[in-house]
Image 1 (cartoon, rainbow, N blue to C red):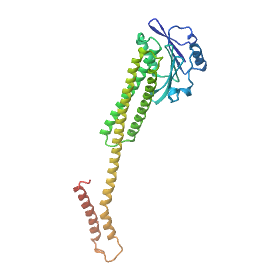
Image 2 (cartoon, rainbow, N blue to C red):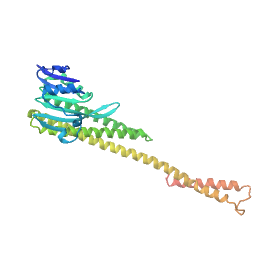
Image 3 (cartoon, one colour):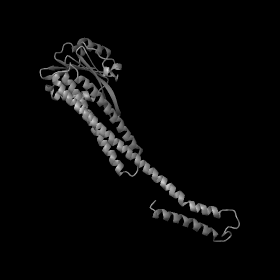
Image 4 (cartoon, rainbow, N blue to C red):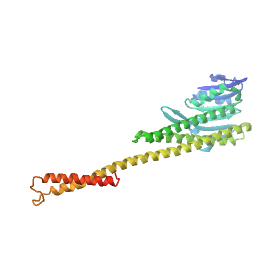
Length: 314
């Protein structure tokens, strides 16, 4: 699928027929979403550009993430998709050529849909592909900020659960681990965008009057990185608290077993003595011998229990 956006007066219009690409005037944005080989080749021929292969887009080397060629800026960045089923990263390729933005991606993305909605609300701010690129990046950063805010609320909820619950649950540790994973992925994608935008900021082909706007976006990314660090610290604290509660529960269980073992040691000793097969054991043959041994066992247990309570060990 290929979406073509062009400006007509003060209005941004959209065209879905790729055959109109060479006919429209004031082209500002061409969005390729899971295009076919024919569509990709058509755009390359009509606009005199060249898309990277999917393997090149996902490369992590700096030379693959950002490079300039023939007055064209090429940049690749990873976006994070968060859904109810889970989360994953997906690569997005940007090409800025003659103030026209070309984006190449696989699959649908809420970020791009939200960008189009913002464009429809305030089309006056879109003068060319550069403005579309900045708006798209702003929308992505806002989505990341919303995700971090949601993670922060989840962390607060887990903290309250740990405070009020008397028993720890395995689900809590799984939730903490999941939040750590998604926070780490948000941090990775933010660092990735920071690296790419820093390269664009140094580009001689990027308009000077838009670089201040780009610096503001970089500051927002830095704020997100600080936020992710704060969330990491909170999650680590919760994890340590959780493990401390587990250790406390285990200590309580071990303590109970230790007390029970010690309480039953004197009765066991008494029972062992009276159970010896010797004829000359005191009370042997006496009718009250059994009750005496039973009394001594109970009494010895109560004495040990009283001693433990006096020492406040239980």
